[in-house]
Image 1: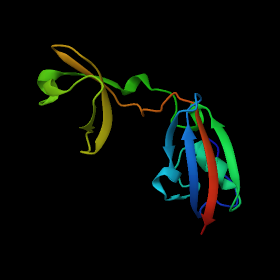
Image 2: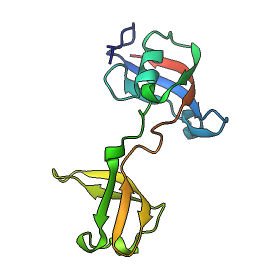
Image 3: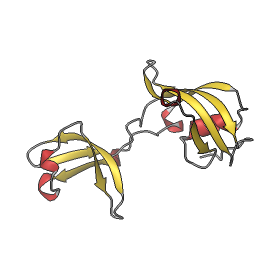
Image 4: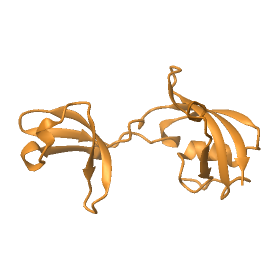
Length: 146
């Protein structure tokens, strides 16, 4: 993984953006919220490709980027598929396939998972980010750098 370089690295950037999938479907937009997104460029708060795009932008500039999964949320990890016995996970008998829930790791921290399969004995969760494996497109407008 290469280090991100550019005039905005380490600075607080405010951007407006619209994110779409390759078919044009919008998945996120700061314009819809009416408030720019604020983050420290290069600090790992954003996906790599977004950070890298903003690193050299000038205030007022608009840039359109296409990100491969490796520059966004990565490829799905087969080790992030968890199969558990329903009997050992109280409350899981009520869960439905497609439902998003939180499990807790060994350190007590919650993490999101999606129920992807269930039978009488086992329930299977996918802990991959919902956009893992997807190509993403962004139209980014740099509003402010401080």
